[in-house]
Length: 467
Image 1 (cartoon, one colour):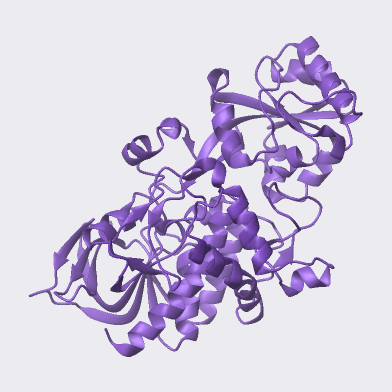
Image 2 (cartoon, rainbow, N blue to C red):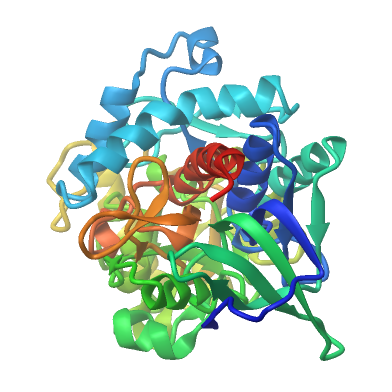
C-alpha cells in the first residue's frame, strides 16, 4: 500500500480507466465507463470477484423509480435525502447526500434497462427510517445474486477483469496524476499497468483488525461479516496523495447473524413483530432503532449472543429470502408449538421467555408501553407455533472513507480535487455521519452503485481529456 514517483517506471500496458475492486461499486463504475466510450479494466485481488457485496442482502434503496410507480409508491430524491439526513442527524455531506439520492433511481433503471439487472421492488415490510417502500433487489434477494447479474453484465460488454491481481503500489507524476499501478500475483510475480484515470472501489478497512480497533473499538473483537480483503488500501493511498478521510468511526453493523452458522437473518422479522432476547430470555433494547446499532446491543449481552423470537407468520416472510432458507436448511432455525418448548431448545429459562412473550402481547394490546420505547401496537402479536434463531452481532463494513465531491473525485485538504483519482462505495466517505446509529438501511449498496456510476462517468470524461 505505497505511493511512488512514476519517473523511470515502465508499464507493460496501459488502459484509459483502471478500477481497483470488482464488487458492486467497481462493476458499476466499469459499466458506466464503458458506456462513456472508454475501455475499463478491473483489478480484483481474489480468484473470483465477490467482495462484501456477495455477503450482503443485496438491497438498494432508490427513489422515484418505475418499479415504485408500478406499485403505486410515491417517492422522490428529496424524500430519500431527507430520510438519510434524519437518520444520521444531518452529519453526512449534504451535497453528496443529495447527489446520491438524486442519482439512485436513474442508476437502478439504467442497470435494469441497459444492462439487464432484473430489479424488483421489495414489498411486505418497511425498514426503519424509510418513509416508503424503496428497496430494490434481484429475485433471490441476496448480494450473491446481485453480484452474479453484475458480472454477467460486465461479461456481455467484454469488460476485462484481472483476478488474482492485488494492487500494491500507485505511481504518481509530479502533477499529482496517478499514472499507473503495480499488482502482485499469488506466485510472487509483479506487473505494472498504466492508466489515465484510477477508481478506488476496494471498500473500507473492516478486514484490518488493527484499524478497526483504532477507529471503532466497540467492534474490535466482533465477528466480521465482510470481505477479508478490505484492508484500508484506499485510505492509505488517498491520504498519501494529499486526500482527506472523514467519519472513520462510522460503520454498518448487524444484530442478527445466525451463530455459529454465519448466515444473515433478515431484520424484516424484527420490524414486522419479532423481538430479541438474551440467553436469560429477557429483552434488552428496542429492536426498531436499526439493525446496525443493534449489533452493539447484542454484543453487550452475555457471550455476545441473542435470540430472534418470532412466529409462523414471520417465518413465512423469512422464506422469501434465500439466506433465511439456508438457515432453515442448516438447522439454525428452531420451532415449537409452545414457547416453553422453544425456550428449552434454545437453552434458556422457559418461564422467563414465556413471561417476555406475554409482556409483548400485552403491549401489542395497548395495556402499557415498552420501557425501551418500541411501539408493539403496530404489528400483530406473536402466536404459536413459535420460532427462534441464535444470533450474534457483527461488523459488516466501515462507513468512513475518503472525502469526495459530487463527481466522486477525491478531495485534498483544501477541498480541491486530485486530478484523476476517484472513489466510491466503502472507499469513499459514507452517508452515516460519524456513528453507527447513523447508518441508513441499504446505504452501503446505495453508495456502491450510485457513486460507482458517478465515478465511472467522471473517469470516462477525464480519460477522454488524457490527464
